[in-house]
Each structure stands twice: as C-alpha cells, then as structure tokens.
Image (cartoon, rainbow, N blue to C red):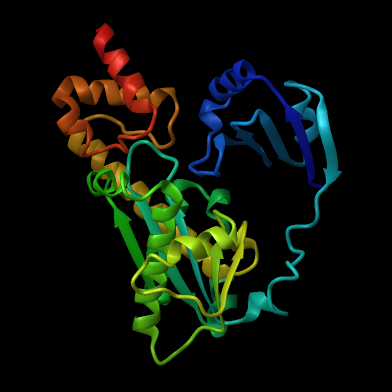
Length: 309
C-alpha cells in the first residue's frame, strides 16, 4: 500500500539531498519546490520551506535516512476518483492538457491539449497510454507518434529564446496558464462543432490562481473546466497529452544536443551547470540564451564554473 511520509530538514540537508538524488530527478516543476525525484515507486518532493514529502510503498524507509517524520499516513488508492469530477469520468469524452519542461534549464516548455472521444478510451489504454513517468523515453517517443495519428491534439512549443523574451512579463505559472488556455482554445476551434463533455487540466496551481491569470488572456476558456493533480490517473486524455508533450520536449533536447555538439541534459541539476559552462565557453551568453531558461539559478552557477577555467 502506498504511504505518505513528511519530514522537516535544514537547507544544508536539502542541498545534500539535491546532490544525492540528482540522477533520480524528474522533469517536473512543483511550485515552491527545490526538486522532485523518484526512487523505485517512491516520489520525493523537496519544498523550499524545508518540508520533504515521500510518497510510495517505500516512503517510510527512504525518509528514515534523512530525518524523523512529522506525519505518516496511508494514502488513498490512485484509482479513487475525486468527488469534484463527474461520475464515470474516465469513460467520458474529455479534452485533457499537460505540460513538460518548465522545471528544466535546457530545452523548451511544451504544452499539449488532446481530445479523447469516449469511443477511443479503451483503444488508447490497450496501446499502453498511461502516466508518462511510468514509461521510458523511447517508449514515450514511439507512443506519441501513434497517439498523434489517432486523436486530435494541439501542441505548443516555446523554445528557450522565445521563453526568455516572454519570461520577464510572465512568471512561470502565468506562462503555463496562458499556454494551457491557448492550446485548449485552438483545439476546441478545430473540434467544433464537436464539444468535449469535460476539459481536464493537470493541476499545477490552485484553481483560483489559474482563473486569476487566465483573465488576462484574449481567448479565455472557462466552461466545463476541471483541475486535478495526477490528472493522467483520472482520464487517458491527460496521459495522451503528457506523452505528446514529453516526446516533443525530448526531441527538442536531442536537436539542441546535435546543434551544440554536446549532450544536453534535462532537469536543473549540477550536470546542467557544467554543460551550460561549456556552452558559454563556446559562444558566450548569446549562444547560451538560445538553449536555456536564463532566469534559472543555473546561469550564475555556469558563469562561475566558466570563470574558473
């Protein structure tokens, strides 16, 4: 049975954990967190407040390495549907959206909206469409190409150069709200006159916050909207959107690697700092700005590494 274990640690311990779990980091951005990692089937989320949340069958065992728990509980089964969603939600015709890349220093932010008609739900599940974090990168790329042939979708890719132009005006959450809204709006236009029974956004910010930011957008989508974390567990449409987004992100990273002549990593760990320092040595800030999100702390770290060489 899945467990949730919470501990409180110092900033020094968070730094040690960041380094310890670098190879296990996930390409996921959780608000107010330093990193998200996964060891086996257990997810570790480290918040800037010092709170560390371990979720999974080995939560208690892994947490014990770092400190004493402040709380421990058995978590509900992932298949248990949220009371906020309509009955039999997984079998409805749903438009789902998800994003990838927001927490990675190199590479773009990719957002996908995907529509799965109720007649396609069983077929997609049979193909293995599920949470992208349970799939290998080659599986994701292969599945994405199959999914794109089967269902309507809209994919938006914000390259680092464009991201750096937008970022001073849009914080990370505002940018994701704008991108999700635009992808959903464009897909709804393509689907018309067909209308989904529901729109499910893989939740990355409180619903009230999303609605606050979306008021600034020209083409606001507000009807039949639902927000829930781990949305891929509630409808295959979000899983499909996640896979398409992830595949696009991986393909862009691969393109960057070829252009730069060096392996470009995902995430925002120490490896990213070193590779960025190599890019700086090759072409300075002008070159680096084409491949990274400049406002990340990695930029200053890379400058320091490059200066010592």
